[in-house]
Length: 375
Ligand SMILES: Cc1cc2nc3c(=O)[nH]c(=O)nc-3n(C[C@H](O)[C@H](O)[C@H](O)COP(=O)(O)O)c2cc1C
Image (cartoon, rainbow, N blue to C red; front, top):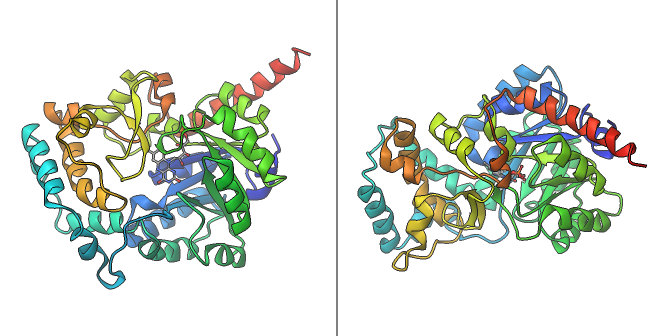
């Protein structure tokens, strides 16, 4: 299959595997797609180590990196970023989270020294100043593509990428966002529909993709949101996309770093079991609906804070919930959740990421051939 996307980044198949697990990224790239690592899950030294590892696995094949740099965010003192952001969290919010963890009996997870500070650093990196060290690391590696979500790329990113022959991609959820990204000089647009896991808007992929293809006027567009099978990929190509950008489906891969308790919850979930909620990051993001959301929606609960204050407030709570859920703790299992899209309802088993990639491609090709037979 050759499309403007396969030409742009030099891959065999027009499929992107977005994930925070380096082993998923390497597996998708080695299977002929483009693996893209979620940089926002790491501190700068961690990202450096992960990208070095990926490069050792992929033998020169292309891979990419994705950053979350929001346009609208709470600001702090750049010289003392974490502390100045932390100081903005109201005591009532801290009390609410502490009481919630206490009521569900979530134990203090034994964490290696310094982990709390690392979590804070990762949360604070969700701002232009905080993202700079991640960008420096990304550009010190042999990346083929850099993607940005939640707004136009940070100042200087496009020029820096062009100098390094790195393609720039941007996730968009509305036509007006696409126009701004094109003005900023991006090489690739990702039309991400509301079905998607993670931060997402309200327009469905079926409606959004052709709108963005129209606005893009020749700039390649990938469809994202609700694509986890060959049929869905064929539909995306029919809408005018040059390929697909998949996120959720890799949460059903063996290489994904999510704990087994969470993967089991995903396998049991229906497509109705997700919601868009700002309670993890401060911006609406699709995730698995659990008791966590019921608690935040209760009448007496505080309103979520803006990004990155909300992740600073809750990231350590999630570290504890994840650890306890992995150990089978009942209260933690009720709260346990993660970003996931509506395709979670189609998960039936955990498989290697390469097998998932190959099956989506093979089923898509078969479906396209079948459609040809309709004429
Ligand atoms: C667990 C998870 C985390 C995500 N985190 C990010 C992120 O950090 N940056 C980003 O650009 N998109 C993020 N996304 C969105 C994906 O890039 C992608 O657009 C989306 O998953 C596509 O829809 P799908 O989930 O239906 O495959 C995330 C998605 C998931 C499932």
